[in-house]
Image (cartoon, rainbow, N blue to C red; front, side, top):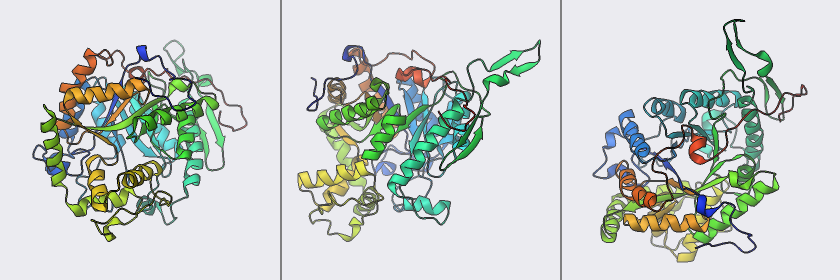
Length: 461
């Protein structure tokens, strides 16, 4: 089945030769708001390294492309209900790198509150130490609670955050490319470790950053870390089309997902990029049972763990601070479709408010739904039904794979790896073993090489 938006000329990849890609978001106890209370979870141990080491081993056994750790450098407003906090990603992923061999390691770091040189050095170090398995999830922070942790200045406006991010990424990439191939000589005759002519200062002087360079960490086998992004606003899509290689997205409708992928690739093409160099991975939370009734019972069990106060608090966060706790939970959800909250994720806000309007849901019903998948699509069924759903989206061009959001960890990931992955392998759409040692290799992305030299005028190329 192929579904194309009106005016589309066709999907950009050869469907017959494509292979699925899977990233798994390893979020503590899982992505259902009630996960930390589930009977299979050791709530006291989900922030310990042994838990994450076991999760990553399961993901690597399933030959998944990568694990992913999100990050919010602050305490969430719903801290009373939200379960264990997440680790700082670079520290976490460096530890995981030491106990794995193949799986990619993607971490979030904000362009709003890092400096380019520090971030470039951190990710280059992870990339080198893991032999080319690092990826950077590039985000602009839109949460006032985070802004307050970095000074007294108010949260910058949406457009200003992306303007900073554009220059930030250009500087980071110039630093990663400040080593030419062959810079390291290791010449014992001359005593030269490297050729200084192949190591360049970038001399960046921009509107927001002044960075001399060069980077003091040499490139990994994949050249530079993979660039990932998850913004869904119009400005976020422009940013993704310009800078990203992997795009995480929240999509619930297959036709809308095809339109999203087509729009993103059209923007990339207009910027002179190869549109097939972007991989689109919608979020997917699979609640799996040996029968459909068992899967539905598992979903209901998780739903029943979530206290109403917890789901309402979570929904308020997802709506950018619009306080639904003051509304009648049994009353109709207000029509907010044309009145977005400035600090909300544009894509998440739109998905929630349009679903509430389309299905005429009450406040409590919206909150219960949001708690189940944190705004991502949830599929409840047997392994065969989950595999069918994945292949349908894949064949339609709605996804190049999925950003897995297991409802409970480790149980949800183990069920997926042990029961869904074998079905996808038997259908010829997913690898049986790793064929590469780098994240770029897993994703079918080219090795990034340094192709520029400093102009001496201080501009980033």
